[in-house]
Length: 136
Image (cartoon, rainbow, N blue to C red; front, side, top):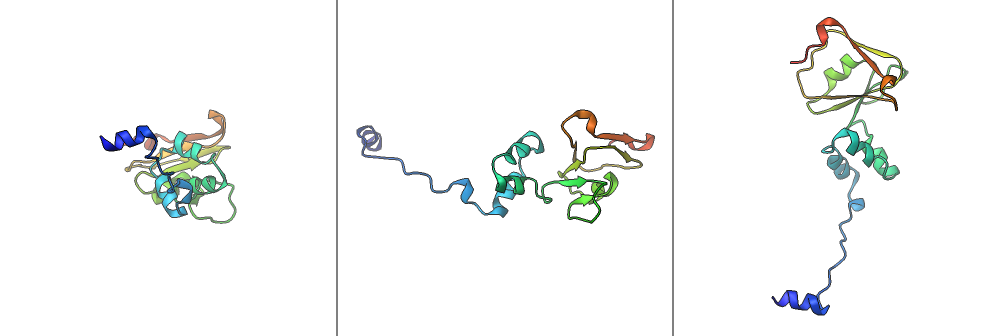
């Protein structure tokens, strides 16, 4: 009761929050981002500022399939098969836009999210041969 009365009289003031999320280190922010759903939450997080874009798009949070990459880069794979093999349960694989990606004899036995890149739905095409379109 006394606190409520002091608040009404204006004697009790709220202190400003000094633990702003922007004060967290990169590792902690990236850990928080890892709990966000890739689309739309992590994608929207990347739009906040340059630092958040770097962290939200970091290879630790996304695996990528990009056939056009000439040199190897951490978290980037030349085909879907190798990305799925390297993925841990719960990982997100972003498949680069452009062209068709062929997947054959691939079995996904862990929870993964595969997302096609590009702004339009038909910018990324995944073709599965007969033996690989069954998911257990």
